[in-house]
Amino acid sequence: MYRGRLLAATALTFALLTGASACGGDDDEKKADENQEPTEFGDLKPEDVRASPAEVADGFRELDRYAADVVAKLGVDEPAAEEAQERLLTIWESILGTVKANDGSAYDKLDTALSLLMTVRGADDKAGAQEAADTVEETGADYLKRFPGTGSAAPSSTSSPSTSSESTDGSDADQNEDADPPISY
Image (tube, rainbow, N blue to C red; front, side, top):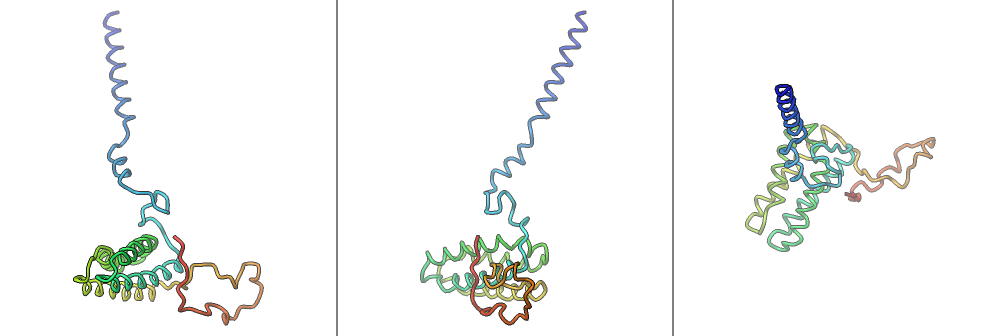
């Protein structure tokens, strides 16, 4: 009888210890997730977000504009340069998943150039920043040649699904292609 109780107690202890360690979870995964800040995309990493071709085209147009702003403001208006750098990060995070999925080489060039543009300070780094801005512009243009986007991801006020039966010859589409469309983030 004593031997049966001893075996039962040993088995119960073993089961409790095994069960407790199994329910402990993965602390390493939780620690990694704690370091990830939530984004406008929820808990998704920027690499996991896919933008439409139009959003990517708009993103590249905006990246060019804010990269030029960073270069122009360096050493002249540091708060404005920092604001433009923040916009670069926001825009890049919104399209980088798509760029990385479509063209790893373009992603690497852009990520390196944008990292420099987002961290550069002062007029002494203006030449390097200009080179990085040129890389962003050239790589973006090359990417869009291979993965074209139609431009403005913003809905057009002149067309609606209810008027799809009307004839469209394209004459009224994109009347002002040079205008920077609003991008909401």
